Length: 564
Image (cartoon, rainbow, N blue to C red; front, side, top):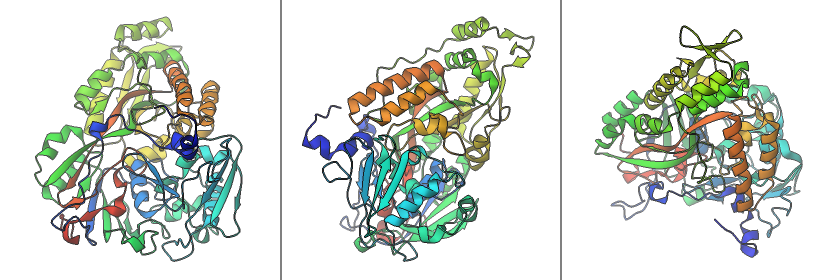
């Protein structure tokens, strides 16, 4: 994509860092159009049931790294900005998109002014204004809160709220092109100052983590039953309530950590939708005549993550041999049944800039992997496991439990690693445990290598997952990786607004990743989702809220959802 300088460039400055173009347009999200025998008019009412494959671990903005928590957040919180199914960012609580022309962004990308709509309210009827935004960045910056993403927050030097409390101006220590994406969608929404300011930051997640009492989205929490379901109901103080939104009365998110159970629910017709489905059951989903199956290229890459806290992984030869022993073609063909896009870095086709189409991926070569370990002095023992200086190449390999295609990934990788003298012992965990205490603890011998899908916000900035200062509990660097050279490159790409120049830095980051191997990218996911006929505007997107993008516009024929 080439954008020439000029007035259009100035007007769309934020787009250069935030708006993404999906290259696979033929596979773009396809929701049901809002047309029925009601002459295309959405009907108010109805209770929509959605099966969540993983149990959320927290429903407080910027308190979780888990996508399923983010999806629920997207229904109960409104952010300053919101993304749509195509990756476009729009004003939500904010009155307009900041640009250089309207004074919202300084030329050096270090001053950002956000102006809010007038008359906003929290779900309890209290005013929602710039004081809440100011309070939120300070809360997220507090180590006691342990925010999931602090990349942008750490750059804030100061902030000032206008006298009318309708705008907040942030001064950054360094230029940061993706600043708007750090305030986009429910997982990055402001928090209510009047509700939380008297509470110890360390206790917020413990007290209201899965049952937030004051929210700002199209819906508010009605009933929280961890391990079973989360029911959200219409918020009459929603900023779009005057336009009749949301259409639904309620959404019930059922925690169903079994793909087998999700399929049974669909066969019984008791669920209206489900996302992140098991591709090994595709034929069974397509056999359901009362449902529509949707495929959607994701922004997520499936990665084999390496816990750098394990001293053995400090030997680059071990990581290199592991990378050489990854058969991506088999993983895509056998585990994902073709529902994946070849990828060997962290930026798939959804990211522009970010995606590097001409990148040369490491070849699958077991002979080369064996030679790499031989040359590094790792000797094959009588039990076929390599050893050196009393250390064995034997590791724990974990992922989310009950995921059939990931189990196939594990079987393929375990078998190939055994052929180079690396033994993998498989132990899987429920999603809430895996993305919570298991990964965050970073304990070698328990967490050595782990598989999960990762994506960024509406921008390709990789810092949240790989910068040295983003290790838990102050970020999402769950590989516990730190490299000063990569940190320097991350700072470079953050300071550039021109997409072509920024892409050149991303290309350098990709090469550094392939050389230093903080993790091993397996493939780019193509998400599989389903919704019942008679439900409308179900349009999952590749970023942010994912499945619940635009959930305030979901509606059902006759105001009654078909599961009932």
